[in-house]
Length: 447
Image (cartoon, rainbow, N blue to C red; front, side, top):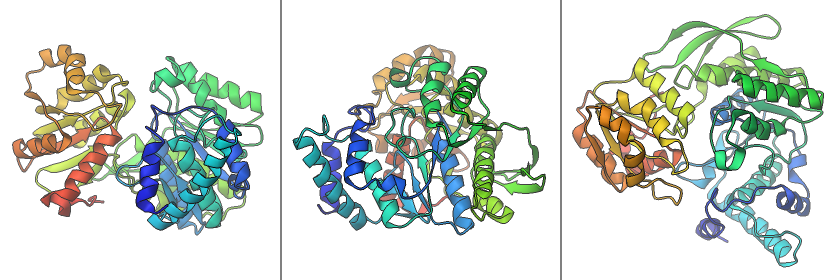
């Protein structure tokens, strides 16, 4: 297959979530046929409701600054599928993706025809296998893996025990993971295994108890990255500096490359993880710790596009906790007047997300992403009707996404801000709109 045929085949496999079949049987069988590439290097695996992508990016950046050849596997992508698979900070090339996809397709389709797997691979399983094989081909020293969904039955959770990270856990994907914090934590806790090390972020009490019990069951002594830190300062765009005390008692001044107060919590997990890797024999200096978290960029997470008039802020907040983080950022660093462009998936707690965000906006534009899971504007209006009834704000429903963005640009004064949020898919559509429009010269994060 060439690159375009690869993309077409991925589309044939169906929607990443709606067509997902959770389980490890198929991925185990496929990887065995490939020679178990996921065992050729150790892997840091990261689960959580929010912050796992940012944390993965920070861990990889620290390793890169330490001179460690690391692979990074994340999801979903914003614009190009190649974004998901990186080595040394560089995306897999289209021709490399196509070559590996051809091989994985031939093997997986043969296994299916012979009845050795019960169905074709899912979209996520297919890309996970490619990522594992690519990392082996590139001879990475370590891989950093972001769990796709949950943990227990996620395709990434086939790697041998090494280092498991858990970011903050909250309500999300209830139809797959359960409707309580404890149930969701139970799914994510399963990336913690006997023989692994673990770093766990600050958690709600219900999640903390589940994670503590899992660690005890596996004989794992976790590092709880939940200490209070001294804030040293903050840049005008919301990038914080804080004092970090290493395991050996040294104080480091850490400057975050990512925006938002909540990124301090993610940085603590990444820094503690890097210190454990240092204990394991990886040569990671204090300078690499600081330079890594200072340099990291993670598109679609409080990403400022500029210089532009008005200022454009993109964040893929896809649940209530994510919306709460965006609200906190806007309250502290947002410009006024603020136009909010909001779109979400239909299985999300839309009313709760709206309650966090809508009161901050001077104008609200609802839109729908071209995705099977996306909530139509009618649903957005219905689920936010009570809230909107109490807000004296202009609210419009505009489709498609480019039309909503054009409308936001027209109605927002040059000294104001447009915040696009509610879904990473919406952020991806916004980036495509920027690239297609005359505003493509603004597609550069101010950092």
